[in-house]
Length: 130
Image 1 (cartoon, rainbow, N blue to C red):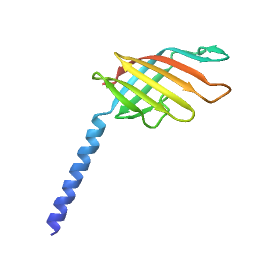
Image 2: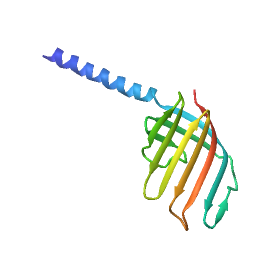
Image 3: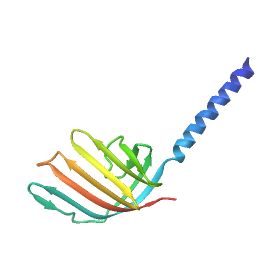
């Protein structure tokens, strides 16, 4: 009986490890450089004083983790070719849409906090980290 229990335990561990490594293997990390950024509100338009920020993000299915720009836990994702995607997410404070195609990431958000609602748009040049 002990041999059967150990065999089942090893099988369970193998399946779990395979799922973990498969999930990690599907994650893609991108390094991006901001090309343009603008915010528009009823009161006027603003461009950043220090453009050109760096963005790094990792996409794993419909979850994106990053050092900025991606502020939602999960996104509705549509693949575009081998490395591209469209993404959409919304909460009470903001609505975000993204499109990554041919190494260019477009992002627009309607942001509903602060003094007045605004539309924020950015364009990044991105490369898949190999």
